[in-house]
Amino acid sequence: MNFDFGETEKAFCEKIRGLFDADSRAALANLESGDVNDIRDATMKWLMVLGEAGYLTPGLNDGKNSVGLTAIQESLSVISPALYLTVEVTARIFGRLVAVYGTPDQKDEIIPSLQEGRLIGAVAISEDAMNIENDPLNTSAVNNDDGFLVFGSKGHVVNGPIADWIAVAAKTGDGLAFFLVKKETEGLSIGQRLSMLGYGGLAVSRVSLENCPVQSNYIIGPFDGKEQLKTVRMWEDQILTVSSLGLIKRSLNAALTFAKGHRSGNKPIIAYQEVGFKLAEMVTLFQTARLLTYRAAWMAETGDREATVLAHCAKVFCAESAEEVASHALQILGGQGYLSGNPAEEAYRDAKYLQIAGTSSEISRMKIADGVLGDG
Ligand SMILES: Cc1cc2nc3c(=O)[nH]c(=O)nc-3n(C[C@H](O)[C@H](O)[C@H](O)COP(=O)(O)OP(=O)(O)OC[C@H]3O[C@@H](n4cnc5c(N)ncnc54)[C@H](O)[C@@H]3O)c2cc1C
Image (cartoon, rainbow, N blue to C red; front, top):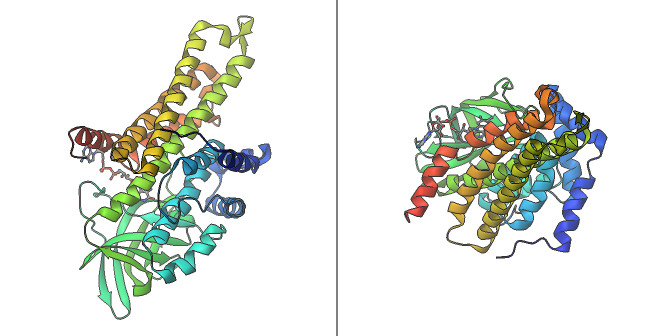
């Protein structure tokens, strides 16, 4: 097993980190109080910058999670949790869906713009009473003259209010397909941006379709079975796992800086054993989470037969560690930590999303158990 970074990967990560100075990081943090237009403007600006730097291309064509991809994602996840998710949903979920399963014409129309950072994508699968594990899709599509009419509603869609394209999963007479719907298509309605516990700079909304026409050349599929849905969910889980690493690192950095600089009882609080032990626990969780994430990436890259189980282990462990590390960080920051707008307080709120979204912690544990029993 070898998941060391090469010189090229290190230089690429350094380049991504170097794109964001202190002012741009502060502006991104302020997006939590911004409106949908602010979020779209900031996202378009950063997508172009990241596109030019080559961030939007890795993993697109082969759809494979890998160590190198994980490394560059980690660089961005530490800088801004919300921008990271917006960008990853655009490139590594919507973009990959088109690049891996789309037709040559769909790829020609969408992928070059996406790689240059000129469009925002969203993927709408889950419904109010449907997650991928349990229930069939209610959203459906029926033939009309030159394509399909799509009907249905998706409760939460990341990038819904700011997306140029939304890939909507729906059942057809022949199976399941993704319908590529352009914004402002007749019959597509985007709900109000949802107010959430965390990921404040993210634009999430309900997406509904009523008699929404989609021409046959904008359909990916139909497919038999759920294989493609499972693949998309695997991409999403990997993105969420790396987001957990970003939250852990942000909390740890905030706590370390504070513990060294803040004095109480005439000494920096890091000198108190109880504070030191908390930091030790946080570092241990960070290092373990990171090892597990990169091991899962390495197993996916090398096609190891236990790659899926490891990916679920990493998702659960990292998401739950993100909450634990953020909680320790808040405790170290004391009264200051309890105030809004510091990285530990944000991470504490953000972390819950990572346990709910994608394959939830409960379902991940079931899948790990199935894998242990040889059924995964
Ligand atoms: C902020 C946000 C953004 C989102 N963005 C998107 C998006 O862009 N696109 C998209 O398609 N979806 C999106 N979702 C939906 C998300 O993927 C689902 O919320 C998630 O899959 C959980 O499904 P659910 O909310 O329907 O919960 P439910 O499936 O109703 O589950 C409720 C609880 O029951 C547990 N549970 C359910 N089934 C089982 C089972 N079989 N075994 C054990 N426990 C079980 C769950 O773990 C959970 O704790 C988003 C959700 C949120 C909160």
